[in-house]
Amino acid sequence: MVLSDIELILRLILDVCVLWALIYTGIRIVRNNSRTIQIVKGILALLLFKLFADLLQLKTVSYLLEIVLRWGMVVVLIVLQPEIRSMLEKMGKSNASFAPDLPAERINHMINELVKAVSDMSKTKTGALITLQMGQSLEDYAKTGIQMDSDVTSELLETIFQYGTPMHDGAVIIDGDKLVCAAAYYPSTAKDLPSKYGARHRAAVGISEVSDSITLVVSEETGNISVAQKGVLTQYSPESLYRYLTSRLGKADESHTSMFQPVINATKNFSSSFGKRQNQRNEKTEKVDDRVKPLEVVNLLVEQPKAEPKAKSKPNSQSTESGGAKHGS
Image (cartoon, rainbow, N blue to C red):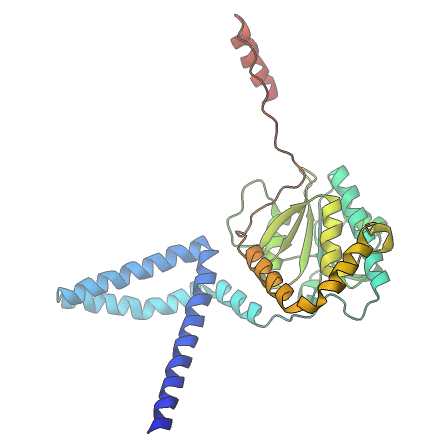
């Protein structure tokens, strides 16, 4: 009798855990998609009407609502097919690191060439879309473009994205330190992006939603550099982009190493005995980063304008300001 009770309790705990996991996954899907939110609101409204109809014993209304809800679930599965597919793809993602067998020197060289190319294209406002393959394969997307097998160089990247060339509209895929594809096409995100972001930014967010890749975008309108990962679009300066890629892909070379690096290394070695606490702090930091709202853009290039003192009013100041506004527009 005792064993049966324990088995029953374990089954109830497992049942609650599975139900909680399904609800949590559903909330994660709903909160990042405005279309899904509206559908869920409609389903909740129908369920509320069904409850009231049962309480008031409105048999006809209750029967009709029951039919709508029964077949409506099939319709919801069809409408939410992209979101469900995205969820299943995320469940199957690999946690493998970037090019694990590649020497650090080659990774650092690739990062230097990549940052140089992105920085140069940012200055000339040349649009670019570059994806770094991480643990999950991008072979299916590479097949949509032109197959290549070239070393990553700044000259090659700038030539590919030069306006007027046959491959400048698509995306470049980098696997390790090799450029494996150019002119590839990605699925566009279903999220509501501000109007200032164009097709490249939508494609970058789209590929980051269905893979663990890192995608770099250079805007041809403003020259701003953005990175898309996990559905989040973040803006970087060339210097901060180098630090970000180095922290994600490999170790910084000695030319970019700070003079205080030996002190930092000694401090890390001294605190190695407290590794468990450090891991807990890192986990908390990662949780904070995950709380960043989707599609939040962190602008590291534009400084906040300083407040200018108001000029004293003059008799003809109104006509002058209106003329200046017309010229500026």
